[in-house]
Amino acid sequence: MKGSELLVAAVLLVLSGRGAECSDPEIITESPDALGGELLMCNLTDSTLQISGHQWFKGHKLVHEDKDGSQITTYNITKVNAESSGQYTCKFLTVSELTVTGEVNVTVPPHVAAYKKTEHSNEGDTGVMTCKSNSYPLVQHWMWYKASEDGGVQAIVNGTDERYFIKSIGNKTELRIHQLDIEKDQGEYICNGTNFLGTTGDTITLRVRSRLAALWPFLGIVAEVLILVTVIFIYEKRRKPDEAPEDEDGGSAPLKSNAGANHENVRQRNSS
Image (cartoon, rainbow, N blue to C red):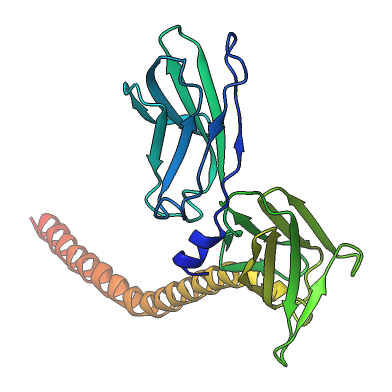
């Protein structure tokens, strides 16, 4: 949906507040369209109250504060979209320390987004896909579909298959598929969120790996170790026969030389 359409779809609702000593003060608001599409406005009709300032909150977060004494306060939300949607509160501060508040709800269609665009799981494991919406109001109804090869979609609900389990709470939905089958479960899944302003969705691609896929890294390491051990064994086997004769020849020559020299010395002593 385009920004201009979101602007048209934005709805402001006001709940009048009252101070402890005020007699039904009334706060009137006008829609963003009437004010140019970007301003929230609260108008306090009770002119007997002396205003000392204003505050604007989004939820519990203070987003604007001033010391103006006007009976009218405005807040610029820049653009009506999922990020700016929510519950706003305008608060009139008075000299007598009484406060009068009004609530303004800025609403847009759901802004549905997948937690992950692609999910990877192993065959036989449990696949988990999650979608959420960060817009206001909360999604009133979630729906899951599986895209078929012919371009159509098949609705998925709890009970369609005992392996499917859907859990949806507020702005979050989760689809679990137990005992993944590489032939049946791999493909694209669509999550749709609906509130009173419309429906939007997102797509998740589920990829299922073979049961043996997790073993490939381990088998690769084992193969590398076996190849390394084999190379070392062959190298040692070829090196030892070449070194043995050299040791034998090198050790025998000095022994023969020494023996001859000793024999010569013995003969000289006997002759003398």
